Each structure stands twice: as structure tokens, then as C-alpha cells.
Image (cartoon, rainbow, N blue to C red; front, side, top):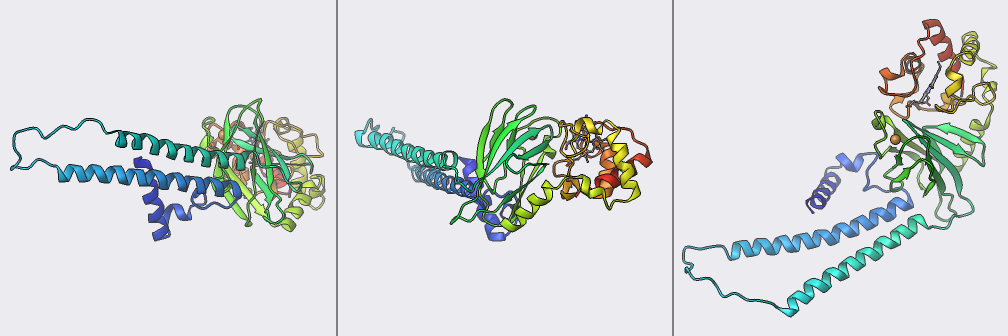
Length: 343
Ligand SMILES: [Cu+2]
């Protein structure tokens, strides 16, 4: 109960001061998609019911404590003892039952609305695979594979184009949670879970793996880019281009970098579509340079960071499952030059 009060206080305080959780990009009180709106509505209902009960009970308790406190004028004799009252016992049994039934029905409605919603024909399908410690995104009908940065179209309530996610895991349990879009859904090996999101305004929605999955769980961030239909279509078009085209105008270093890359162990773990690199243990790098971040969110995608990452990934993400390949400075330079051409 004290959690509920604390939450309400924090919420109103931050609203008043315009700071703190209200401005946080992962604010659960600032829903931006239908499932998040339903959950927000339900939590406000539960909060108001439980808060009312708390205030009533605590208020009565304080009243009794103060009103009937011991006074010097009190006589030594015990006051009259009253036993049993059918009316009072009935009311404190029946009213809570009604409240619980009401909360149960409202919760059931939200669960049905978010989990059993019929899929509109305009829906986009994306397969999400959790890995230690990054996200794989596959768009099976569009032939696109990418990592860590999920792009989805915004959805107009008049003509909905929600994104339906099928979630699974390549290793251990993870959990997909972008608080402004929807509730958490776990990614569990050998099991397919589903959820959907329909952000209505373009923007970047952030989240975080919400199930402890190993050393770098904390740096397994979620980035959802909600785009206008036109922007989304052009992103898809760009992701569908074969990678080989990118090198055409590349520098000599980039061309040499491609050769070094294709002759090193990188290809066992990474895919670059249209080349001999077909590994699936690490993120698909076909359009690496089109991403804002690397390492699942925490590192900006700049040539310096990329080089540092390839030289020693654990320096940026201790416990990462990509080993340091101990490349010399020259190979690091040319591989970085090559990867930065992969738009
Ligand atoms: Cu995880």
C-alpha cells in the first residue's frame, strides 16, 4: 500500500514540477500506443480504488487513536465491551468482494483488449529474437533483417497499421519492454510469445531488456523508431538493397577492409547479405552504418567507437559474447573503413 502512495506522490510531484519521471523517455505515465493506454487506464483505476481504501482506513484509524486516547480523567474501569454486529460484518465482507470482482472484470477486459485483439489486414509482422545481449529483428514478408533498432510505421486509429511482434530467444529468458508502447512480454527459448504496438506519433521510444539475462543485461537497450508511412517505406527500401552496392564508391581502405573482414573469424558470427559472411551468432551487419547506435543502444555509432569496439568489445561492454580479435592497427582501420560504408 505504501508503494501506491509513493507512486501517486511521485507522479503528481513530477507533473507539478515538470521534471523527473514525467519527462523520462520511459515514463509509464505517458502512454503513446493503445496497449500502453489500456494498461495506464487500468493502473489509474486500481490506484484510485486502493488509494481511497487506504485513506479511509488510515483516516478512521487516526481518528480512533486520537479521539479515544487515554486521558488523566479516565476511570480505572474497562469500558463496555461490544461483541458482534451482523450489519458491520456483512458490509465488510460484501463490499470488498464487490470491489475485487470489479477489479477482476476491468483487468480481464484489458487483458483481452491487448492480447486477443484481432489482427487488422494492414498489420506488419516482425520476428524478435533475444540474444545475450542484443536484439535481432526480422521482417519475414519484406526480406529485411536488422538488429537493435526496430523501425515501425505509425498507426492511424482510422486505418490501423499496428506492428505484431513474435518473440523468442536464442539463449536464455529476456523481456521486451518499451513502457510508452506496451506492457512487458518475455522472450523464452522454444516458445513463441506475441504482442503488438501501434505508436500514433513519430518518434524514438526507448526501453530495456526487463528480465535479467546475464552480465550485460543492463546494456541490452531497446530502441523503437516510429516513422511516418513514407519514411518507413524508404527505410525498408534502403534495408532491402544488397550491401555490395555500397562499396562501389568506397575508398581503397574500405575495399581492403572488405577483404580482411571476409578472411577473418568475423564471418562466422556476422552476416553481410550477398557476401560469404553468413554467421548468425552476432548482429546482422548488412546495413550497420544506417544505425544510430552499436552494442544494443549504449554506444553511439561513430567510426571512433566502431574501431574501439572491434579492437576490444569488452572495454565497452564487459562480459560481451564477442571476443577481441587482436587485430593490428592497420586491419582495425581498414575494417572500420569498410563497415562505415554499409549504409
Ligand atoms: Cu536480455
